[in-house]
Length: 358
Length: 194
Image (cartoon, rainbow over all chains, first blue to last red):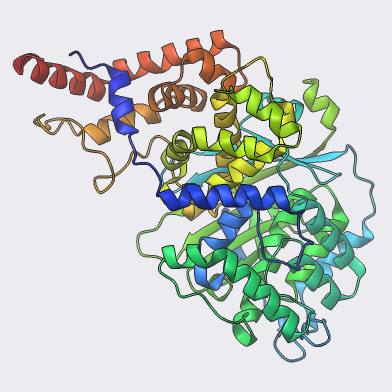
């Protein structure tokens, strides 16, 4: 028998079937979806789509990482200064996370952005991301976030336009809620804004609820996730996180969801202002003045505490507008590759994209 | 036996179990596909998402096609892409260019004296392909689809898929390590009288 290149690839791609339980679980998920409506955000920790995967892969601590980027040169360090006690989110009895009062460059920048009221053109933000992991080749993705909260993606303009035309929209409504939370945060009550942003993506923290309600939500989530925990070798936690653990988790979600909002609302100054204000309330985030390709920038760093000690992330934004420029992510595991991403953000019109005018 | 299109039509008329029957028909194939693309653990997480997404979008199914598997691959591919977008960079599972490792299922041609590192050779060659070429190649070589079905999965003209497949195969054959590997494999086969 003569072997050709197709045989090589076919053999190379051989894999075993999934475990029988995996099929059962998947079918159960389908039946579950058939039987119920989508839960209200922030009340039940049933995550859908990639967020479920993303936000559970780090398993027990529910810590997730976000964007990747290019660390910029650093000039002056602005310490994020808390003038009150450290952030201790989640006063379950009152429903109001207790956040610190913080003065920082972020707050000043947020104020400057808020004052700049130039109307955004178009009806969507196009974020072209070029990501390089380790020594690998750069991967480019075209990500479109519409002002209506929809999200489409492609490898280039053509495939992006095809995705839009085919209605391949997978936001699950999350981006819209994150942008809404950021808009609120631009000038709203900070504690309320923090809760809104954390709850923009479903979670089982039960922020703002009573202990009994939190436990009920937690139990429901753990029941759904128990098999996955066991499969991955973790004990199923009996109670929702509290204290420092919850504080770090809330900080993690503010970072992650805030990064989402920066992309989803990249063309909207108020969204960027809100995100910056939110990040100013996270003790694990530091801010440094920097320069990127001659442009004054701010470098936001999220330390390992926000990622259960497993990673750190850096985001560089335009010092004047807050627009994302680069990001980086570094796993702290020995030998792990870092990733660097650069962003080009522009406001576009969806119709122009589908008509090939953009 | 009802066709896939008929099961989808029944589900649109309120018979949810018809859609579960459809899922049961294709779950092994779609599960393997996910496993190839994102690894076993993530595949188990994503499989249910694929069914949920397919169920949600079943109204878009073209009943002219009796076999729904290419459509399900399309849904799965979309979920895979979404999964990759959502991953923190250090967790990204490389695409086809990262072949199953030695502890996995890569054990081809043990009789071959490996003067050529088979995994490295193929990985290097695959890395030289364009992403759209790799997509078509994956679907045809890995999922045993025709080029026309691969085109349906990717939403591209069948002629384009055939062209991409042709280009991909030609690129692989031109790759010196792959050429050397094929020469060695076929030499062994000839010696063994296969």
